[in-house]
Image (cartoon, helix red, strand yellow):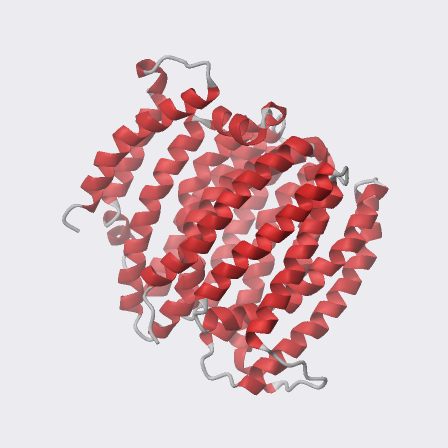
Length: 468
């Protein structure tokens, strides 16, 4: 049965925003129990577990969605390969615990690394069942799973943190999340493990999955090098502050764009032979994401102190400036987050890989400049934000010109109203204190800034939607 992007997004939104509410509450509680050092320890290890999870993916999830001719037998073979790979990479990661501890000159990393091999195994084993649910458009199942799994794992993490488990509470949360997600997805798909899987399905998806896999690996370094180097050269406390600010910047990106992005590929892949249909639908989405990102970015920049203070408390005040600078990247991040699904839908993961290589090179240079040429995590935050702004123009050159073979000038012209809103809102942020006096109460100050920006943004948004 066909399902529209709007309906699928609405289903996904229900689960996503229930999780958003839970996440805000859970982070507010944990930030008041745990320290930046605790979050920094886990952030360092997560860099490495994410890399091994990226290796285990092999692009199988998106390939299953795109390759419609795979039989049940083929799927079981792919699932079996993923289990073998999960065992192999989990063992390798356990051995890497010692070099990781040596690199950071701290044995505290050993035990968390060993424990997180469990999470790595189940995350790797979950790639194929997760891809099947997305391919079959089981968005209700996915939304329900998202909320319940997070609620259970977060409740356990809070309980353990209150009992003095410190960063181990976050480790247990990661393990529980991976195990519960796998069990849920496996019960929903009932995939079978085959001792000697066939190689034929791997041959069927290799051309598509290879570039998807290569994209994942390159994108990993783009997304994690900052944490890796910050923990090494600036220390765990600075990493904890930077990582908290970075994750908060990603919060609107993941929870606004994340409502639509997971359903784009499963739905638009049905039109893979009609690129003009994909383009017209995607253009409407870009306009919406652009406007949403402008408002969120403006409020995040203007009210960074209030947001950090309300959510995490004054112990996290040092990360407010990092968050303010990173908020400059919210608009390009929100739009870019959906581009990958469009490359996948038109069946051109090779272009996605090429674009990501260029963006990663720029991001690496920005991170190195921020750490070694700057004066701390604030400079790093600014450099990372500027690199994401570059990503926006690079990604759409490859997607629009090389992918759809349309004019980039015409594409940006179709976003002229959104660019006007961007400039007006930037001016509004710059002029805020000229119109509104400073307010000592943190909650009232946040509300005043929200109301000020809303009064300016609302008529601009209505104008942008008029006669389109």
